Image (tube, rainbow, N blue to C red):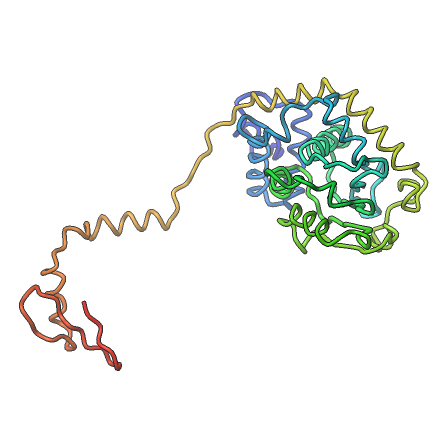
Length: 331
């Protein structure tokens, strides 16, 4: 492969055992941008992306992609996930999450269904617009109650999702804002924070009231035409926008399942592991001095005769070393 080829083509040539599709090339081109130009890190991130989608990867979130599954359809009514059609002035994407939806029943929310659906939505949007751009997430918890989060954080769903977005996905979450926390009870807020713990303060920010989104974003604002009515925009109600994405999920059902099988059956070339300098040096040192078991106690004690702080005793016996302190140490 020519060094002048793009990162995507070079990485595919070196790591895939099959020809990549044009869609894969478009996605692979995002990794260097996501890694701020570091191609070594981009290569590692791309490999983690394929492993996460393959056999033995994030099977609970990226496999069994059936939008018409009862749990997924129920999740569409229990929580809204709405990616905005427009970007911010600085080119960032935004996803609005209403957790739970105002019409949700007073029952525990399924973490697996919520996060698996979120990944499906991200993949569909990435297919429609495979261009760079960081992600900003707003999670509205104004109607959240402890009953909604019962058993929500059992398992590794949130942990796997956060790991995926931090280290494997082609796009990166730059900010996560949890808004309308003024009526949220302490335990619910704590549990939600546990789910987002790997990001902590560097990414997650809490806002107690229904501040205007553009007030939080500052100079990198979003055009009002792209915001829902509930947040001072003109794009429509959150429920209607969420219903549009539910229909889009169902219409892309075949594509989602084909993508699942494609990545699941993809084989990567063996990863080249270079021996670290530390381990090589340690092996060389052991070879030079031989095994410690080959050195007898007598031989080791002979070397102590060169020291003036040694009390003479029977050759090969334990000796008392005099140390310049108030205590004696024994060898």
